[in-house]
Image (cartoon, rainbow, N blue to C red; front, side, top):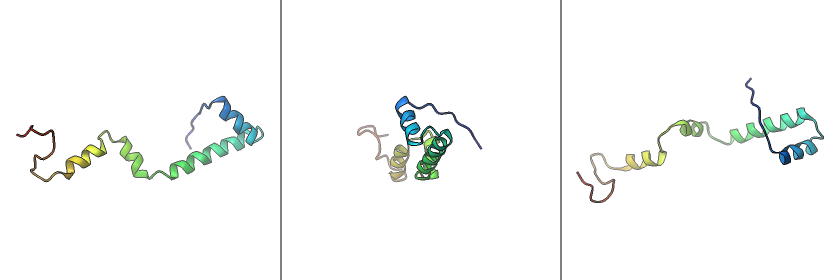
Length: 79
């Protein structure tokens, strides 16, 4: 199991403390559950795509051109 240390603003900490009556374990469990649920909403391939340095929009645009076509680029910059 990995560990991560988070710093949160005072207002958020105060709200959590009030919500869970100062119970650090309950606050911890809530934060872990919240992060886990949020990550479950994101497809796994999206996190892999974010690690890729290429722009997906540029890649899609270039792939959309016909093979051997010089139709993409700035007008007047033909070969």
